[in-house]
Image (cartoon, rainbow, N blue to C red; front, side, top):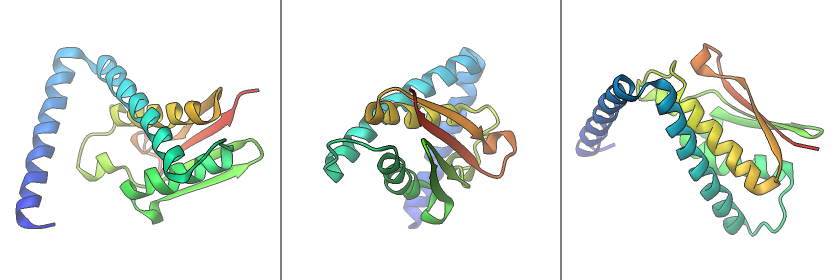
Length: 155
């Protein structure tokens, strides 16, 4: 990153961190989590539409959805070596070992950002697959070494 870009990055990161602190003091953690969840859901809807168009998907399978979510959405943010997925029967898992917010030195223990990520994954999965269940298996914000989200179609 160039010097100017690094300074801009640090500036934006500091402003965002201050903003989050003030929002927490004024609105409280539950309100912030709700806002992050809603933003995540909006992004999730856009993610599914972008993947559908980019890859010419007419009908999603659980396998194809999770593969593209991991490779095309999560990997560019956390790095290819830090994301994986697996499918066992009708259950898919997406796992990543790096939290981009943690890398920016944000306090992730409040789970604001986890709520955002859950919203992205769940809404994208819902748009792609219909009735789904997306569950959190582990989170770095809870001192786990990775974040794992389990996706399954509802019967």
